[in-house]
Image (cartoon, rainbow, N blue to C red):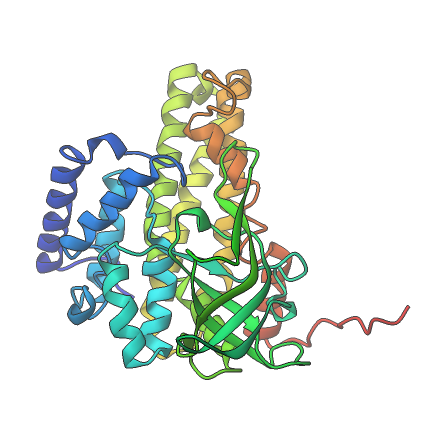
Length: 398
């Protein structure tokens, strides 16, 4: 693992920083620093198209699909500079970081040609159809079903079921959906990974209002929704393997951009502590130092994880990364509120018009729950990384 960069790589960093500064001080200055996932969606969609037009949207992808064939170091540099420039959260995250790499790795040539250029160009947004009311961290319990039928335009999958916690589904044109395509199948067997258009009868998206006042997540109902037969990634019944591949991509280079956002949040907390005198409290200073140290550990762990990604096998840092950052960020939210004191309990604007640190605190309560709870993460570490006996499963008998 290398923590430094060559002169050529630093020159690339300068190119990235210059482009971001030009755009975020010029035509996109009004969305600079936006941390909300739902605010100014139309403007952020325009930002996605600008990234795509300049070739910055998916720089690690092959050039023929709109990328730059960037190596790992260049991807790390771009992720770091993107967050350092306080660029807005990516509306296209699900497509660029999850759907796109999955199609690139597991899809066929026709799927790559159809979907990847539009993702990298910022033309089509995506959402993820994984979790269900009875299948959150235990993805193998999904009950959404799909069956093949003949339609006016050929054979198609007809989908029935419900997904929940569908991030940014209200802005998405496509959804990658895990569903059962083999009648009577259970667990990991009989699942398929379908690519489903969102703008059609039979799909109902209902926002879930969070305690931040926003609605990043949605319930998504499929009532006879359809997608073409060829829109299955991998073979029918091979959905578990493809779905696990998508989750592996979730621990990709975007984790570095996430860390830079964490650094921005920590800097805001330090500024607040200096401004209101909380920095004079020795316990607060100690907690600020601990948070900074934890962030450095997180960066080293992520770089080590990414350095071993080409092996195809999850490394120790990959197993521990999620539980580490989720716990660290939740504690950072606690620290923010302790620094702000009583003022942190008051929203200065209209109802739910929270500032960045208040919103961060409220949202960070969910960090140890979504994308696999801390309890599930510990099971993964024990069973898959350490090879310990699996946790006993219930038999259903009372």
